[in-house]
Image 1 (tube, protein in one colour):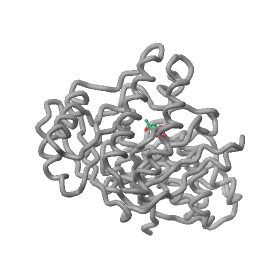
Image 2 (cartoon, rainbow, N blue to C red):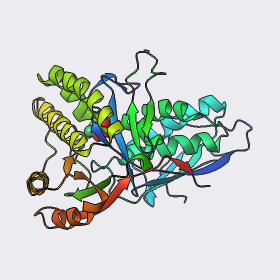
Image 3 (cartoon, rainbow, N blue to C red):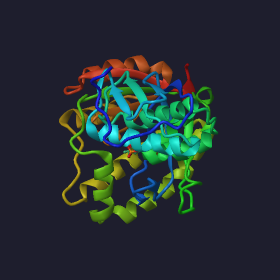
Length: 343
Ligand code: PMV
């Protein structure tokens, strides 16, 4: 464990005993997307967004604050984290150290059981797990709402992964961001939908969502129309969830996703996440629907396609997606539960 990268910044012992916690969190898939910030430093969104929490994919994170440890050390999927990841995690831990009034460094070990940084929301599950683990390790016992506010500052969409089921991130109005957090709309067992993930490419994406989002806000002439679309879609998706109407939910999620990508294509230079396999997978979903299946797609900032359907159709959807040219791997998912402490 000695060869992990260390922060340059010195963190001195504050006389506390330290502590450790392990947390499991799931990624989430946006049905109405977050794409545009009003405050870059605090990750405050320009609109609300709605997601479903995706199981069984998960991130497991252990945070151990150690008296005498001078620098944070971060291991991601069994290897030392790169300098950028380490700096982001360290900055996030500072938020918790400040609340607890301690200055000791931490050892962080985090493992994703699904492809990292490929548009499968590993930063969402990662920062949700990190936030809860840091809070628990320091004995802060923050509410889920407080954790959601803090997780948001690590990665915007992470604020939604604290909760299970169907979740809304409220835009908020306060400039300090204290009211911009996620609230649960309905638990996973309210509507146990299946989510089939068609992995087109499992490697890291060419441009981070942070950079792509900002470029879209700054340069896409379609951005005002995108905001309007989101504000129209939010109440419809809320209603579709309350009524458990998959055809309505799917139609709005699909159009919301395509509108987000259209907005990105208007950026200068354009942001392009799709691969041939992404297009083929979306077209296969449309063909399945024409064949009578109640099946809908969405995508996030990456090439992979997520297919939402009834659990009874999941098997045939998996088989169909596995045969799409360019689809490398199919993962069988479902609506998942909230972030939870394991140890
Ligand atoms: O939270 P970020 O910075 O990784 O951005 C997430 C953006 C999308 O996944 C494309 C949309 C969303 O609402 O999750």
